[in-house]
Image (cartoon, rainbow, N blue to C red; front, side):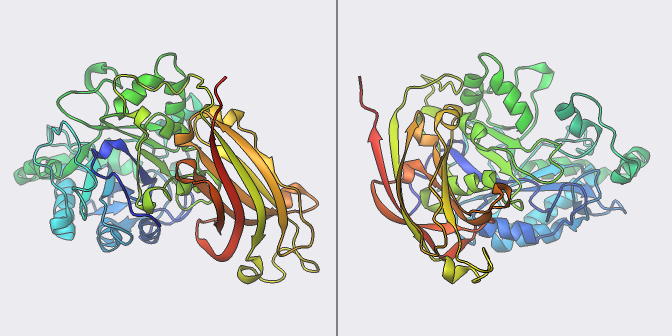
Length: 486
């Protein structure tokens, strides 16, 4: 694998591999919270970890859990220690922790102490909270950064902070109306309403210092604009992070004249995109719309396999698999801002030849696909990327080769690409069944077109979770041609 390159630009100039609710082992409603998914994400190259912070039942410590659900909590200190131990398993480029903070000031003070004690010199503490430009990944090697909404100036903490938790407000934006959630799914609701005033009364005078200590640790400030100002207006004196659900991004991108505003905002500031609140099964959305608009943190549920997660994994195989991919220049050009909604001319032609496949006999049991005969393999290919390339690029399939562990196809396909810099070639091998819905999975991969070079390659395949098979490969040929001018 190649060495990472061009890592000296400001942090906002990169797409960053990002997880959503990184502590959950399964769905968003009743699954267990654990450090295991956090460790798995870090070891697979994820560089942004999200933790939801809530008071424990005794209000004297901090748990990580998905708010107003039946998910089982895990102690924050366990999560912090797991991150500290595994943050740099693959490389030394910085790790960002995003806190969704529902804490009072005294608990924010406790979090500040935990963070400083656990991370020590690894913690990146900015000299000023009003940075005009984020430092580069290269300059922050070995550092852990905190991103969250700054505490209120009145010292009351962020215990009313909400983003994508389950509850009336969490689903309202997705369904267009107030959503009723059973009371049993809201174990913290009664606590927050009954005891919020008591908590504030019981705070010591010393706790007034908590917001300042906590605030000093925040490197990437998040929050909505005050006074109803435009969501996409940049402040020339400081950079920040905004967050949108996938649905909110779709709506903003569809508004006339808004797409270029989003791109301009992300040239200096961070945009985080997260799954809409109705994805209770932890399913994933298409991450390419966020990348097309320059969003650095497109957060997916890394515990849920599927094509959208494969696309994310493919994107971050680029640049040496370091978790940071430099945005293409057209997303950073301030003089001519990219307009994703406009149709671009074809720039490149990608020709792909699928010759043959091998390795299934080594990596799968003999009866995995069929009990009484060798498998019947075929290959599906398509493009993930900007809307134009996804809607106009034809999806292809090879013919099915029956009863062969070593299938030979020798078929060529062509893709005409308008924005090749953001295009990814996804490939999936299937074992054919009488009913297509019962086709068996035989491996997948997703390749950034920007990383492809003309020639014949043995392309390794991965399982549903993105773990590389030991032996399964496709022999393929790639040609990247310029679109001939008229």
